[in-house]
Length: 261
Ligand code: GLP
Image (cartoon, rainbow, N blue to C red; front, side, top):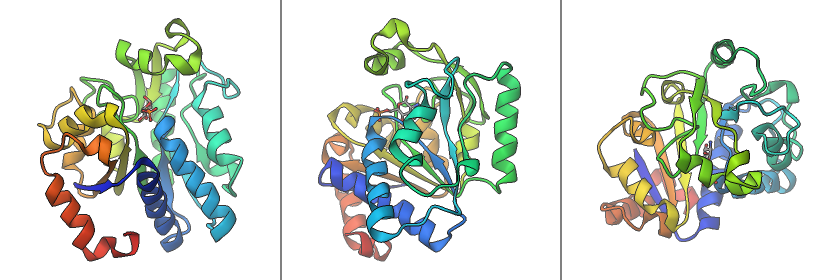
């Protein structure tokens, strides 16, 4: 795992977008794993800008989103389907037949998990998985005690997560109680992971996920085991990391990051 500290939220999102853009340019048929949440909106804004101004071409990419709420139809404005249409799909030249999200409205959730896993396998696996982190340390909707080898399946959301997402739904009582999410094992199978966390509210959980023990209580901590995981944080989210000086040194000195400085 490597941690890249950026001066502010815009620079952090820009760096993540540039990492994704470089991957697409190097390999136009790349398979992207996508994430939702407020943090990602800035990343998608940058990708849309790059598509318009720098001719970033998504036409041969395939995408798989991490998760979707159970019970929400594709056209529900609170669904992650709607989020993705709004922030990315309607604004770049992705082929709609190659964009995928779990179907929250599926009748058989177990079957839906298997179907999704099969689609990912048939696409050749995920090349780059974009990730955020929830207050409980979840990636996707892998809440505490999610098996570190879990696959796409239904998960019950914690009260903390329900509270965190309440504003979007106009009240806690309106937030779905369950979601279909890629498992920790599904995420760990991707060839590269890029996690973005910004703001003071993420400082505690980032310190635990990055520098604490690997535990299913904080599923993002499993990424310490991933062979190629980059964590991008702004100064505020980095505030509680013990190794800050080392991480800053890496970004400032490693040749891999020269083009991004
Ligand atoms: C939801 C999503 C996660 C995301 C998290 C953080 O729980 N399922 O994938 O990482 O929100 O969201 P935000 O960026 O709004 O803090």
